[in-house]
Length: 374
Ligand SMILES: Nc1ncnc2c1ncn2[C@@H]1O[C@H](COP(=O)(O)OP(=O)(O)OP(=O)(O)O)[C@@H](O)[C@H]1O
Ligand SMILES: [Mg+2]
Image (cartoon, rainbow, N blue to C red; front, side, top):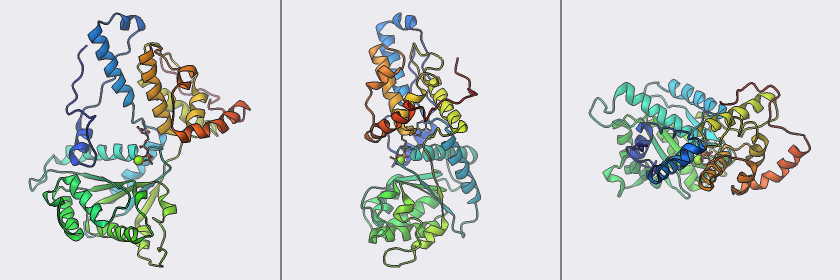
């Protein structure tokens, strides 16, 4: 079995640099390793077996992104906003804030959108602009705590690897960033983990005003991602000193959100089941069987993860690694019980387990509309 070379390798990149985003966008999708029977696997030679285990392990560590209803809905909204933002550069563009609790897939969904947008634009307009510059349709920066305007501008320059990113004033950095955006014809600016910004202190107001400046002067759509942005004041109309400049950001920003899976009605139970069926298809364990997740483990997985996709993907990933390593080659409650999970999921588990035990909740749809995978 020949390993499929990945060019370039994706396990050592950062999205703080444009090359990282390009590599993610343009590297062909991984192919799913072949599902072997236990007998076929036992018959592999030592080298082939090691190679198979490695491929499978990397595959299980990168199962997503799955097109969940939450991800699809977010993408639709983002397309609406991005497509409608094609007005000429003299008009300020509407911004978007993807605001939801941790671990619900905000970064994953927006990144997936950004990669699609990158591919679409490059395919339509080419890798170089008419003036001969490299085209970078998307710029992405992640905030760290205590960030001020200068550091923010510097991270924009870092993304483009601008030679002038080391020295200069905040204003100079901003001008250079604008040059990059214009030359590279960047259309989307993603700002992740915006909650690190303290809106109501000096830095917060400063950067908030700076976003307004960006929205006015840069021909880009801003996509903010963060946790509880509303409560932190992104949409508030004034800060603690009564300064109403924040209102401009509030007026121009459309809030979008992502929810965990719930199982309170039939439609949602079907969605949960479809999610498990999609996951099941991607699992490469020799003894997996139709319904392994969707029938046998549906309640169990919901109780353990409270419907949070981050916890679910971690549990499945770690479970698959363990099942492959120990030779169990399938997922069941006994094996998954040994897999440790994040603190929040473990805390919520007990209360939820009681409700299931008392028959107050179930994840199983009455009509199993979605077919179990063959
Ligand atoms: N649609 C999806 N398909 C598969 N896996 C997903 C999907 N969405 C999220 N995940 C997985 O869930 C985990 C958490 O997702 P992500 O980091 O996007 O959440 P987040 O909302 O940005 O969290 P935070 O607020 O902590 O930044 C990641 O490991 C990711 O791989
Ligand atoms: Mg995130």
